[in-house]
Length: 236
Image (cartoon, rainbow, N blue to C red):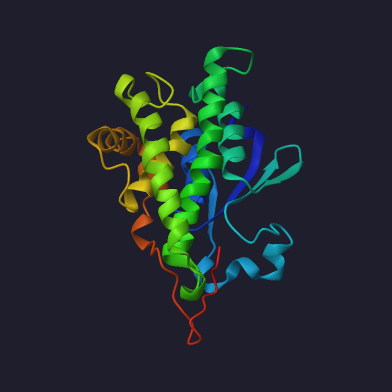
């Protein structure tokens, strides 16, 4: 597949959020040949009827693709987008070839590990530290998932990165898009502070696609603005 097979690619995006994973994968595969549509989650843009009609989960990312033959598709899960794009452009060498190989199995395992249990832990930490109304935040939930992350997740990732420069071995893959985003997220919350993670982030940040995907990350604020009643328009 080549970029000419696509008539248009549109990504709804909020800085440094999960949509940055899809943005990174797009920059790795199609360069700048896609449209980024900012969606202000903190202003409640995700609840607009026209957006909910496309993504009832009222979040980002939302990826809209129109193919050259007129077919259209939408995707709303970042890990699925990353996997789809890596397989759609095999010449970019972002994934082991589909098939029953140990390399492919490990790659899929790490990509899904990042998108499911690791993401869930980081999200619970974030919403209970910064997103939920203060009377709904639970310090026990934060402590539980911080503890699990430090004791269970960090050692697994560190062991891999002490052996290889990237999460699945010597070569960068789309699994690094997912894990790399998670490591950056964790470091923002005071975890993954060991040198092995700093070095990993430096290797990722050297990639032009990474820099393009996170060029707007400075605009991200972890805590949504509160209304006079103490609530926010973004509650996860």
